[in-house]
Image (cartoon, rainbow, N blue to C red; front, side):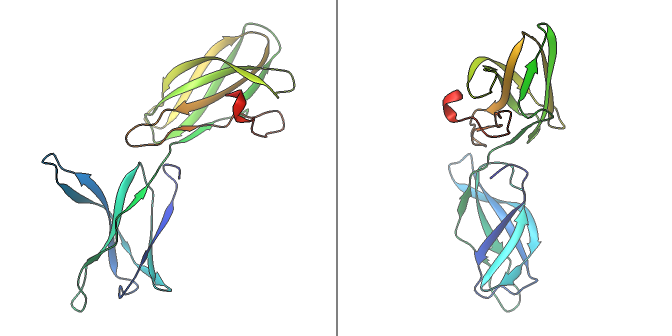
Length: 194
């Protein structure tokens, strides 16, 4: 799943009334080697067909659980812990990851967005053939997106066909990800061109 995307979590509900408050909690290891659960958000349980659901926007890899707080008639209860794997959302604006440079010395600008913001990424540049069916890596430039998630890079390009994508290497909190490298017909180049 992509960071910042809305996820619907469903947990089997045995007695949680519809409309009851439920909490989403995240597992946090403690410095003493124990563990604890931190509050992420409170939601109103929507119960249908024996399962309660809530929506949230995960920001990184973590182990979660859903907690029903209980009421005068029912005891508090926790779901079984479950893990979510999250990748950053990486997007290049405009030309879809390709550009044809007709005159050497042209300034090429690449702009885009990352979610989450302030993310260290690499802009990978490719030289491609005129049919965009084959591309080879030329170089990789380190960037960090701004506090709003935006980034921009410029370079002086030689004449020819260029492709580019943004890559993020896996970290403790996020899985690896890359934007799509597209050909002229907006179809993904196969992985042998990376």
